[in-house]
Image 1 (cartoon, rainbow, N blue to C red):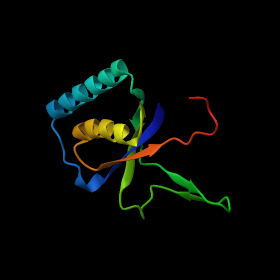
Image 2: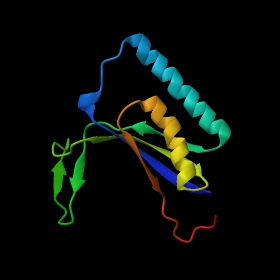
Image 3: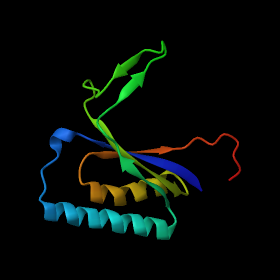
Image 4: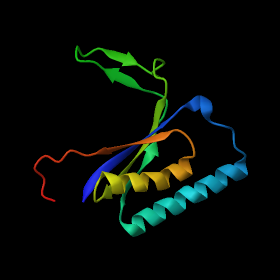
Length: 117
């Protein structure tokens, strides 16, 4: 089995305001998704939303403070899963996307540096 990271990309401008009831319903759906993923064994780390504060450390060791105004979209969060291959990971990302509802999910495999599988 391989490990994959889902990077949730989204344009903050495209988000709509939701009612407290809709927020509670959405949270309930995410909790069910996490419970199912853990039970089924593919969810290694549900991850976390990422805040807006950011910085970049450049090769010359200078630091550029964020938020990154030049970015067209933000990385809103991450999740770590385990799957047989990239196709299986993408199927899991589709399940995640149904909850996210907007933006996109980038699926990246963790590199394996001589680790035993």
